[in-house]
Image (cartoon, rainbow, N blue to C red; front, side, top):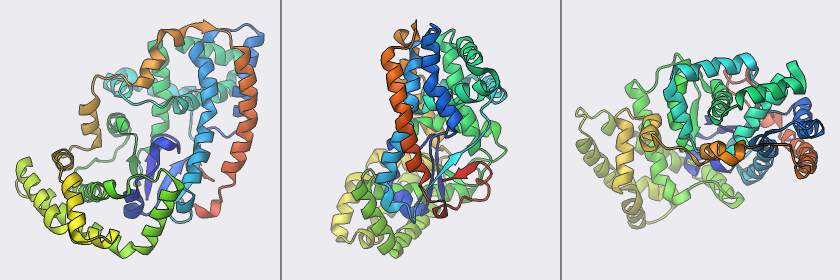
Length: 408
């Protein structure tokens, strides 16, 4: 089973059909923060500040709105994935320490490892996700101990400059990533800009070894080859109709799927365990193996003539960029290394937005926001009833996840 990281179930991380075929089951997490006190605290916060003429950076008021977007997105995605729910898609909620002590530990780590903050700056930061994690920390954990006055002071202390505020946002999100450390279950990251962060952070807090044995390298390459071959055919499960097709294919073509996986495994052993480390030689062996051995099992899976299948392989899978990406995995370049090379030095759109001058201008919450928060709070109650209705009987968490996940 795969566990989807780093964020919540949303349209950015809908699964590839190849992951359903290969791994059979995927675990998604719903948005953090289902406690009624947290929802009340966040929905009333702007009203509290408005009545006392408290000013905050404009971004904080915008985040109050964005907080509620996550649950609506999750509901939409659950509807898209409904045909896969019974056999292939699992969902759970998470509970983990988000108090002042937990966040301070990560802030210290950021100071000691500046490369971690640089990697975070390059992520394609999802603002609703960041808003939910931040406000769940401030207006639940801090609020429980110190009330609104303490929460306001805490925000002021950490929002005295854009750089300080970004460090806090990074810390609360990295704190969440701790739940993925030290577990046997494999992660899948659909938001590829997060590779550098995950590849840098998890080894710092985990005793596990990453991609250092031949068996792991062969298995990783087999998975990537399988994914690459099927990507142009099935793509992503981004509609209910596509999910229905993938569920039907997984059910009726299981032997053909296993046959393709087996062939990908044979190719992976030949290429990864090649005595020579020459990328050029590995590439030649890989291209020849794809040409001669993928066509038949792929044709059996999609029920197309081998001639048509080979044309498809030639047009996409044998593209030099695709082959180069596969070879990079063999060289010990995990997704974290490849992602870091691609994004080093770039600030994401989300990060730039948080740094923009207009978002750091202080003002009182608007009356429009107060009205919107009230409506959002009422809508959230309806959405949460829907999310809680997901049957617990459909979910069996791996043993090492049961301690941190409240199944839903």
